[in-house]
Length: 272
Ligand code: NAP
Image 1 (cartoon, rainbow, N blue to C red):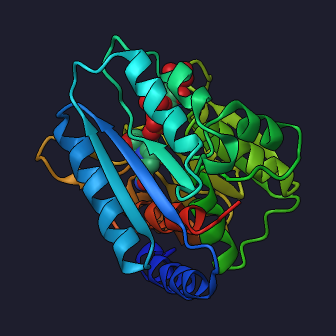
Image 2: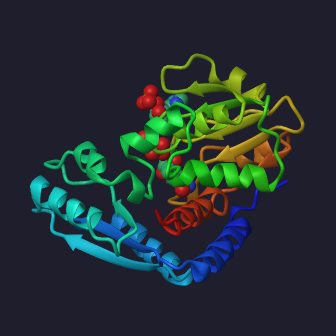
């Protein structure tokens, strides 16, 4: 069965829209974009379009590549203190002369719609409820829940340990009582771990999941997005090979990608 992120994201966005309509204090998302990175510009534009669709006010602050760290920190501080602004997102990557950790840490945890600040990351790590879960992991969990995939007691294998996907999704699965193995570039014999898993979540950016699954109800979630040698958008999973043995599989495109944006809009609709 296909884990259809495209249709679930439409459902989630519809829910967010209704939620926003009922809110007394309306959300306002500020997206800070530094520099001219074309991919970042597209991501920011897509976030703006999604926000518009669900009735969330959004403001994009475009700053030149030459902006200093101090100037950027001052902007973050300004929006932290602006009661009209309920969410702040600094689009990554930032230019090399700016410390992204310093900037992320400056965002108020109650406006940190990306869920990247130490308070939100730390709350997740110690099993408390953060103000915001990071968008991609939260979108993955929504997808698993939509298809009633049992997480409790499942053997889950997460491939990749980035701060934006691998680590938080592993923690979210752990919070839901899965037994979690986190793999990375130093892991030995990944294939044997993948094959025997109940749930595989791959967030690498390389074709890494290319084996048959042992369990017929196994679930494979493909987070990766990159271009293959023919310049086609593809994911970490060899879809044809894996789908013949797994019970559930998410496609690329149309799987985790649309869930990420829906999950971000869900976060942006939260007002603290
Ligand atoms: P990242 O920061 O580059 O991390 C990649 C991870 O993969 C690292 O932990 C790395 O291990 C691990 N890795 C690299 N080669 C490996 C190998 N041969 N075997 C096992 N592990 C290996 O990536 P990310 O930001 O998490 O993104 C991962 C992928 O997901 C990318 O394709 C990205 O475009 C995509 N993505 C998609 C969405 C979406 O909405 N669909 C959202 C975010 C990211 P080390 O830590 O040991 O280096």
